[in-house]
Image (cartoon, rainbow, N blue to C red; front, side):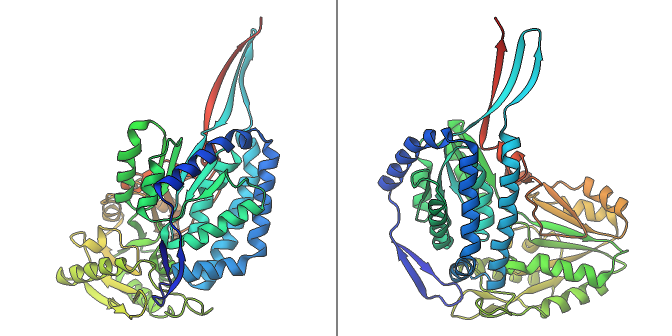
Length: 455
């Protein structure tokens, strides 16, 4: 059985039968049998299912938001934001799928025709994350289904109720039961899924788990995509409006209680404005309301995973021991529930775990720098490379800095942002492969090269 807890209260909200190795194998066999007929259906029919799925999201949005909040602790307004934001992503996939998947003639002369078609991979495993289950999941299963694949979808054990709702909505929308199947369980269910002869693995989660998955499936030469963590930096130049930059970065660091892959986790500030920025940033963070995630006015909720509190406490203790100044927060709250105060340190450096290891919680370090060169060096001093941002009035200055930063996505005067029109990818320990954009549709296909000579 899988026990689902409310992270705000610690109360059990569901007991669910977990999949076993035998049931996972049976689901794989059913998906394999169903995949070819699904791929053979016209693209318009597959897209129609996604349109009806979108309608289902709209029709049940408040119910779905409440379920999401109950099991991951996301404040209710942010749960609705995720669902409303999903609609734009679905609209992108619906609009972009046909031209992206269309056959393309690249040469036609002297009796020789060369063409590229896109064939589905087959049966894929989608091992998804709990922090944004609708965003992260739909980035994979929507284009995968549209491209003609069958999907074995394993939601995180911390977002299983949401995963089951996704399955119900897709089936109601017309996606066959065997084409999209939900795998219920924790790590053992994920391991059983990886043992199946699947045609691709698409995982979102930690670097440690990603490397274990790579060791298991790498020798099989199947499509492997790993969307992993980050230690995302932002640099605040000396020409900014301090209050505006502080407000934006406080939101980028603390939204979803800091539990975002692209949350701001390190801030570097030019020495000329450092003190003023720290004061403004701390004021913003102190104004964030901690409270019951079902309350419309709450901004900071509980951490989804109780174990992460130990990580944050260790980072706090290490930062203090190494000379950082605690400006606000720094303490566990409760019990009951998995609560931690929004926490800000100044006078930090890269000897501290806070500035090197992923936090995934409401904690941030602010480091003073002498100028752009030092900022670039420190931004690149990391094992990760997911996102990075620069706050500056001068666009050319910002672009010069961002062009030298080793990250998959870069931001000027914004942060913690994802667009369906742009590829989402990372470098180094932030992963391999990508989702979103037209590239994120093509990734669920194999291009086939056609050489056709007229008789």
